[in-house]
Image (cartoon, rainbow, N blue to C red; front, top):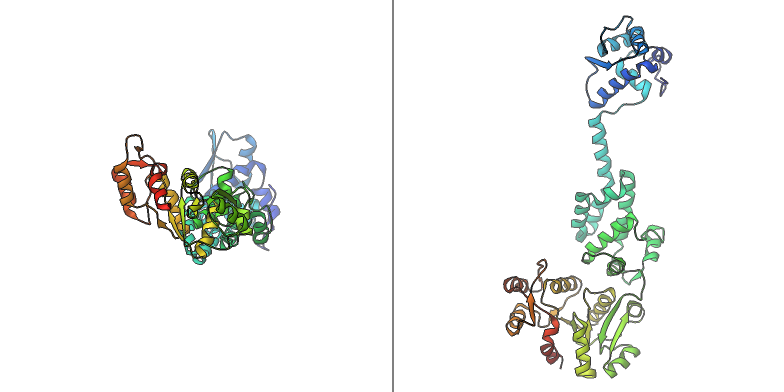
Length: 417
C-alpha cells in the first residue's frame, strides 16, 4: 500500500510501515481500523476476516511475529497491532496515525456531519441577508430554507451558496420600475443575459422569490411564467401581455377610440413607451370581457372609462392601473362571486388600492336573492379570503352559491350609465 502523505520527522517510518502494514494482504485490516475511526470508536478489541487466503494469514503472522489462531476466520486484536507499530518505531503514535499515513486523513462521521451542516448553514447565509434587507421576503426565505428548494437545486453547499447569492442579488433589485427586459436585467445584475433563462436553477429560484414579492399566484406554462416575470417588472417580451379597455384617454390613439366608443387592446410595449398622460377621476374595472363588450354596445362613447382584467391581472393591466392611480384616479372593481374571483381581486388588492364596485357581502347576498336556478351554480374550489371586506368571503362560505359577473350585467350597466 502506497503512503498517501509524508509524515513529520520522527512520526512515521514510511518504508517500515509499508512493509509491516501497507501490503495488499493487510488492506482489510487497515480498512477495518478506518471504519472504526470514522465511527468514532476506539481502536481496541478484535476484528475478523472470514475465509482468509494463506497469504493473508502469512501477512498477519509477519506483522505480529506469531501464528494467528486457527479456524475458518482470521482474528486480529487491534491492541496488539497498535503495540507492534509503536514498539517497532514504524508508527510511534500507534495504529490511528499509521492508518492516516497509509490512506490519508480520516474524519469521524460525527465531525463530518457537523462540518457538512456548517457548510450548508454558510450556503444559506444570503437568505438571511435578504430577509433583513427586504422584510416582505422573510417568509419566503424561511420557506426556501425549510423545504430545501435551494439545496435540491444546488446539490452541494458551494454551488447552493452561489445560486442563492445570485437569486438574492436579483431579488434585491426587484420589482424593476420602469419595467425592463429580462435578458437586459440578467446581464446587468447577474453578469449574463442568459442567467435567468427558463429551466435554470437560478431562474427557478428567482422566479419563486419574485412571485413571493409581488403576490403572483401559482400556475404553470410559458404564458404564466411570462406574466409572473412581468409582475416584477421583467419582460420576456412587450407584446404578449395586453389589457382590454374602453374609453380611456391620454394618447391620440386612445382619444380616437374613445370618441367612437370602441374597445381598445393595449400592449405592455405601448404602456411602457407611451402611457396615458391623463387619468379620469374614476376608472371602473371588471373581470370578464362580456361586461366591457356590453358596455360598448349599450353606452358607446358615453360609457365612463372601463378596464377589463380578463382573469388574473396581466403585467399590462397592472402597469396601466398603477399609472392611472398615480395620476389620481380612483379604481372601482367588480368580479365573479366565487373563490376564483376573490383570488383575482386579492392579487389586485395586494398590488393596488381599489374600492369595491358592487363587490361586497351585501351585494353578494342581494345577487343570490335575485338569482334563479339558471343563473346560480354551486360554489366549488378552495376557499380564499377577501381582505378588502372579510365578510364577503364569509358570506360565500355561508350561502355556497356562485354568481357570475355576466348575470349582473343590468345592474353594472346602470351604474356606468
